[in-house]
Structures are given as structure tokens and as C-alpha cells.
Image 1: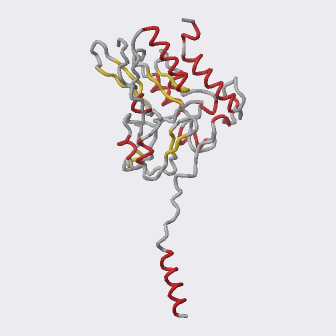
Image 2 (image 1 turned 90 degrees about the vertical axis):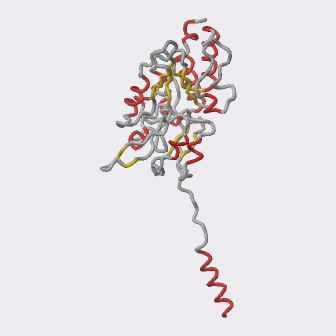
Image 3 (image 1 turned 30 degrees about the horizontal axis):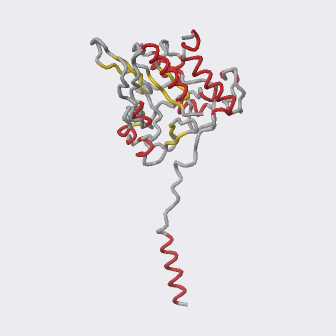
Length: 205
Length: 75
């Protein structure tokens, strides 16, 4: 199996924030933490574009490189996860991440920075699959239920796609051929090291 | 006797210079997703829990048929 990836088709995203809401609901993400958010460029101007952003589960993840306690790991499916029992909440990953994925809940009386929280691709974390501990720390493990991340599965316009990277590339290619534009995929080159990724491939957009 | 005492003392003192194994972040990894959650009510039908090939097939089908409307309606 190829690696699990996200693609957000900016030609389709309508900034409904359904993915954000679904993620927060499914994983019971605390106040102040957004594992996913929708960013709109040129808001209110003709030709504005929106994209749904979360952890891109990078091939060469900078968060993994800078973590001083080595709490990150990558699963066989290419999902970048972390161990909250090891995380010290230093915030280095937050500075290193080009997508702003790491989030830090304010916990405790004095609002100290808590342990890092981020998108898990709905794959849980290093606890027993489906256990209460896994849900409490990392949220729902939908992959182990045979499902894809909730943000993508409930996206009404199918702008946000999740799954096997090869299949996603085929889906996007079909769309680009059909509509004749929108081949560029925001964040792809940054996350997966493709030189062509993220650049305009010549289509009208 | 004195030489032996010196050697033993040196060994004892130098032992403190050793580095403890730094294995804090190396131990815990996720359980494979095809192992399932053990909660049948939440598990998607169409794949066999514990079977990697079956799980991969379900993932591929969900990715393709759930997200690609061109597959469903034809080109």
C-alpha cells in the first residue's frame, strides 16, 4: 500500500468549515485546539480560494527532526503520530511545521502550555486500538475501524480527499482533465518533496 | 595489591562517565490498523478484521468509490 495522504482541491472548497467541525466533534478536541482549519486566500476578492489545512503527514517531517524527546513516529501507512506520554510540550515542532499543525491546549491554573495535539489522520496513537486511553489522548481511531478520516469522508463537495496517495492522485488527475484547470495542489511539494508539487502545472486556474 | 586497588578504583570512577540508554521515545508505536478496534458496532462492514489485504482493499474502495464521483456517474 502507498502512503496515506490528504489533498485539498482548492477549486472545490467552499469554506463551509464542515471538516473543522467534524474533526472537533469526532475526536472531542478541546477548546482552543483546531486540528484542522480552513484558510481563505484573497477573501472577498474575485477569485478567492479556500483550502483545508491540517497535518500533512510529511514524508520528511520537520517536527520529527526537531523533537528533543523523540516522541514522533511514522506508521507503516505513512501517518505521522506522536506519543503524548513522552511529549514535554516544548513547542519546537510548532516552529518547525510549515503548516502550523501542532496545537497546544492551555491546561492548568496558570494556562501553561500542555502536551502537543495534532491531526492523527484519525489513526489514534500508541495505545490499544479502540481503548478509552487512545480516545482520551488522541481521539477516534477510524483507520482501525476500516474508515477514512472524518474530515474527508464528510466533505460535501469532496474538496478534501484522504487515502492512498496513488488513488488520490488518480482522482485529482481525472478532475483536472475534466475541468481543464486546477492541477496545482497546495502544500504537496512542501510535505512530500516533489519539485513539481505546489506549482502551476499549466492549467487554467 | 596497590595497583589492583587503583585499577578497581579507576573502573568504579569511570563507570559514572557511562551514558544511560536514551530509549524514551523508541518504545511505543501504534498497533496496526488492520488489527481492528474490537468494537464491532463501529467497524465498517466489508473487510475482515486482522487481514491486512482485506483492510487495504476496503481503504482503496472507500477512497475511490466514496470520493470519486466520476467513478460513480461515469465520465
